[in-house]
Length: 510
Image 1: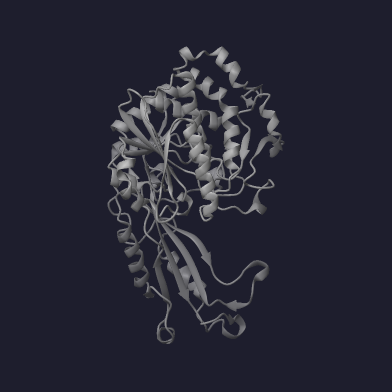
Image 2: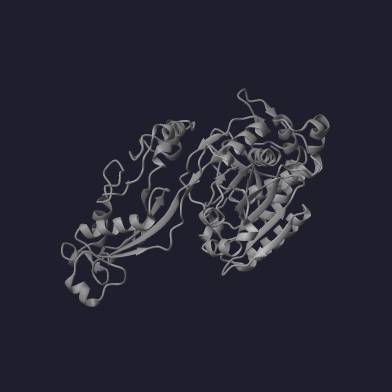
């Protein structure tokens, strides 16, 4: 059911009725594509439920293998050729279909692995047994799947791991291909290549060497990444970049072992306080990084500023959603803040709290830091600046456990480790061939002008494709912004499923 401003509800009927009302011969305008997409929704959701029922934690190789087998059957059913690209770790899945008369090839990137689950945090028996829910008295209540047979409410949601991130978009893509075959004579304006990652949620460390190894198989004119949520306005969204990511782990040392706070408080240095001083020295009270040179190279000109202000964000709503009174002052508004590298403490740990609290001076304090990267910055340089800044605070910075001699002769000992290689940022010019084509195609096929985002805050592991294949890339996100991706009770709104199929049709037809 769809609830409008007057509270009226409209039941969307099954696909057969829609095809009667809107014959395929005139199905190329936005209204017709919407009708065709809606008509396929029940069939598509059925296939999605089957796919979601396969556990997909990348750490469990047998589960990933079963997902690959499922994908192989699903894509071959649509006349794709498929291939497993072996890597030193989790293999990649490649599918390809060529269309007569299509001159360009587009490589679509999605992933079929998901974050791990803690079933105790989910409001259902099993995160891998998807359930259908509707809002009743401001609560999500499970309803029978048989309700779909009588029509569906686009506000209903499918709850299950990877429903939005990222199995839902894969099924949307396949449904769009089904419509191409059944209603458009199997004709697409583009050839289709699809690369599906089974290790995205674990960092995709296998991607860079794999892209180099299989470069010839992956060659395309453009690349589209289908991951993440659309803009909160519900309009189609095109994102022209993503920030990168590099991590740092800090360990500050106090006494060799935790000490009684009565005997040694005021005597043994407390590493929690030491860590607090170090972290607080990195930012001012308004959230700006004060490490010299951290923001060097960022230039927001008038043209860029106009693009950023063109995104219809509502700062009041953003603040209400995340529960803050005012934002940090790195940028003047949300989109501008994303154009700068960020310095974030993503985790802190020292001793015990809550029911486990103890009256002790801790032995260590640990901080996990992430830096979100933008194309203008060098990740190695930023990591070096942070390390040098810590040293300038009078700390003894090392990259290992301190020796006994160091414990007895040095104070303010900090172990500094850069947590793995950086995931690099990317950004494609908005006024480019791919940008102009996608904006026109999606506008034509959906009837709405898309929201254009210069760079998103999150990170996707596609920089190796851009550098190795020398192709421009953009993101076309499809799922609802409140989908709880990575967390318990991940969900996909049925409206977004239908709209995602329509968006894929727009890309394939125009």
